[in-house]
Image 1 (cartoon, one colour):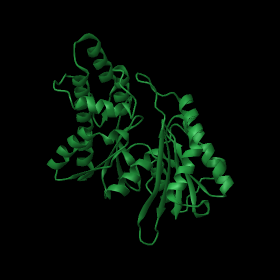
Image 2 (image 1 turned 180 degrees about the horizontal axis):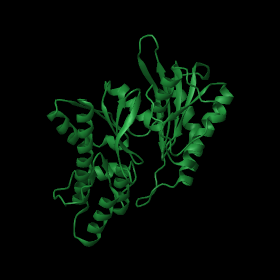
Image 3 (image 1 turned 135 degrees about the horizontal axis):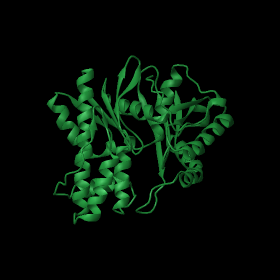
Image 4 (image 1 turned 90 degrees about the horizontal axis):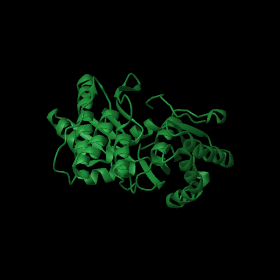
Length: 331
């Protein structure tokens, strides 16, 4: 069975084509094409401008994915798209294309939870069995585990996501958004030598990052600290908070596995800190590289095809988008 997936919940436009061999269980990634809306240094991306970017590039990206995969339209079994969560205008711009192609090609359509896409793709790539999932990105920070046929949230951010915290500090430092602000924060942090104490805000299983961001901006403006030391201190602090709540979740459910997904999951320092904790518990950390951590269409195709294989289809009249899509079901 073959699925094409459409992802556009933020500034990454992704089209992926995946094949599931239902007899052997083998999954083949046939195409994973992405185009990013990159804004000038010191700025973020706005919903309206991001939607325009997606509309301008989606047809060429779809054509490239079909060409790369060497798949004919007649071979595609289902069209999958990101239903949410995400930014409203970009979500809609991509959903309209997915819906239009479903009608033109006479294919069923499946709306996919963006979070589930990250988790299921991470599990497929790493072969993690029953991990505690740390989902960290520009819009989400959650500790998730599978319980009673559902993914359940054990802890999360109380305000902004960790990726948003890093991105906004990159804007304060006027760092480049190419390839991503978080990546450039990571490169600066590697050169940092002095740790600057910042607020450490863990409340039970939840975390808070907005106060840390305000504090480090004040330090940047009022003290003579290098950007490298600031980036280093910010990373060490927020990642230590994430490791702490992940360890609590591991103890609660008795798991020895951690799976890191989402764009921030690419960060090697986060992976290193998590590994140090997990090794002390005789466990193992699973993570993927930027092909699968960062938003992509292949994860939507994969999660959508898993749902489609159980008989799930999104009726055309319900193929809408929602910025707050909280249904966390494991297929």
